Image (cartoon, rainbow, N blue to C red; front, side, top):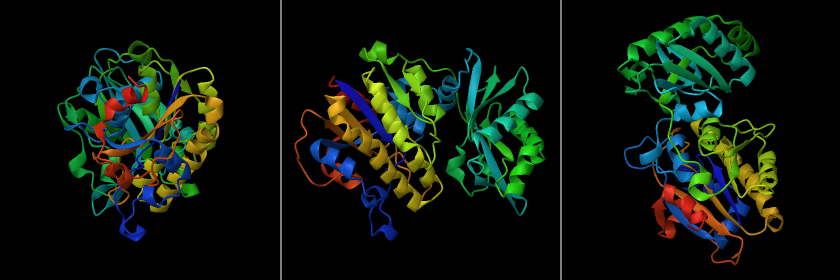
Length: 398
């Protein structure tokens, strides 16, 4: 038996007036997800336990089958695992976004939490400069992908309140700076980084090209090294993770799964959807489990880009789900879980903690049971609800 999780990050949403009261998932043309839904089990999953921030770290940890209440230690430590940064017992990892802050009437606003989706090559130069000029025995900077990077505070503090930058798009940063023990050190580091980035050659070149400069760092998602059992220990399974996002890849590393590189996978609307679907087929020839993650719907929603979110959902259906569906005979007996990790409503431009729709398909029982397709409404109508971390055992028939 083969097992697949196909996850469209942030696909779930709310009814939108300009769509006639439909959600983007309802509006999008998703024939392959609809076919699987009509032949499988539909329900709603609570991937964000009460009291947790509705981040992709918590939600995906749950979809991986780990109870966040027992396993969650912060987002940044998972990203550290992805990029090969070994955290010591006294190290605190922070997610470091390269951002563009916009000045208005003496205040700074979160103009773009991704610095215009800065390319990895530009970002690497900036992070390397930060390490060269500001890195020391206390702080070390580590490059990641695009705007997503890592800061390690050696012997640092973790009891801080740090705000995800995508939660405060277009808002003043004044009341969202780090608070708590050690906050003064982080604010001072951020100020020093801003001074270094202000006239950096990379940013000067970006301005000349008409691109947004990465004129600040933003620190959040802190935590210590996680303690997690591997998939082999928990389920006796081997497999792999397909994602362009360090967070998801880090979860895979901690779970003892293979990380599959896909050329052209960007974590954005232009990602190589087809390449991911094809990589999943190749991985299933040698492994029993695949976790395939697509970030694009979430990124579009954070930008408030309704058309792009619908397009990302349709591309996920056509090139990822559709590729798997077209090769079911080749795969053989399999069970497929399709879902988002959390809602990312376009009109809010950030995550919410509401339950999300899931479909669970078993190739051994492909008979048509309904014709409602896959959406928040059709899943809600079944009355089936479960905790997110219990879905993987259901997928594995445990």
